[in-house]
Image (cartoon, rainbow, N blue to C red):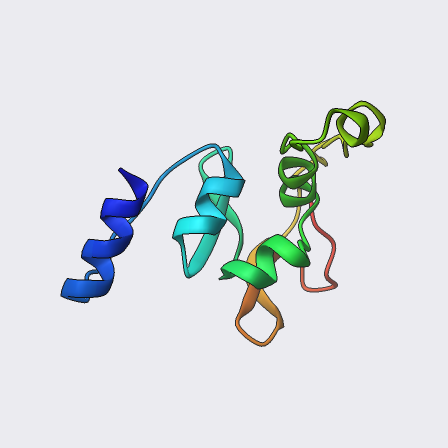
Length: 111
């Protein structure tokens, strides 16, 4: 199914919104990624940038939860827990790197 969507996208120059909980699949099929937490986008950018250099703690936590196909490394890998902050303050999407946006306060603090 995913390969069919990818082929149609290429052949017909389609743009579509793909919603999933599996970030490895999202990276495979997407050019750009927006990560949502509690109904708000917390990080957005090119797929490689978000996946390879996650800036928001929630994104880091999601990526650390992706299972690895190697049982040995899977047993020893460390997952990154996400503990949301108080959410108080003036949060806005800010461009932290060119084309890579994160929901944070003006000083760069994230929840």
